[in-house]
Amino acid sequence: MDTDQIHRDATAPPTETRLVEVVMPEMLNHQGTLFGGDALAMMDTAGFVAATRHSRSVTVTAHVADVDYLAPVSQGQILEVVARVVATGRTSMTVVVSMVAEDLLSGDRALAGTGRFTFVALDADGVPVPVPPLAG
Ligand SMILES: CC(C)(COP(=O)(O)OP(=O)(O)OC[C@H]1O[C@@H](n2cnc3c(N)ncnc32)[C@H](O)[C@@H]1OP(=O)(O)O)[C@@H](O)C(=O)NCCC(=O)NCCS
Image (cartoon, rainbow, N blue to C red; front, side, top):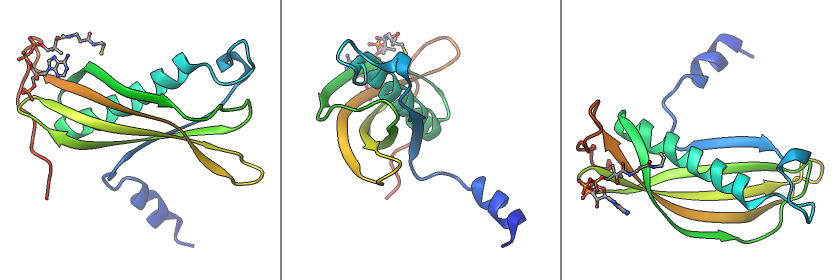
């Protein structure tokens, strides 16, 4: 196995943003399942990274829409949050975020949450700036 190549491959430009986190005890609600606020923060973070990678500008969250929690997530499962820019305006970007819960021992994966976020690119003075259109 060419480990140098593996490391070089790791630096290739990503086509999507993925955040992975193990669900720890401090992330649970009173029911013993993942607290929705933590899930939302992770979705917002993944969306922010996707929008910033697309625009290579400072971005802020302008709008959060269609957040659905589809299934409870248990301690010890992993959360894999996937974010993609699906549309661009002049200065705004729409990012669709999927939250997948995975049981590491069985490998079962389930869609546990979804959301649609709008981010706006800003210049150094905090004024919205144009973003590149989506390729293709
Ligand atoms: C987001 C923000 C920069 C927009 O400022 P603004 O003066 O309304 O800017 P504009 O009217 O020029 O709109 C800029 C773009 O944002 C979009 N936009 C603004 N508010 C929006 C909203 N609530 N929902 C969706 N899009 C919105 C506009 O449609 C426009 O998109 P376009 O250029 O692609 O057509 C401003 O409202 C802001 O700073 N909000 C606080 C952001 C924040 O603190 N987020 C939480 C922490 S990251």
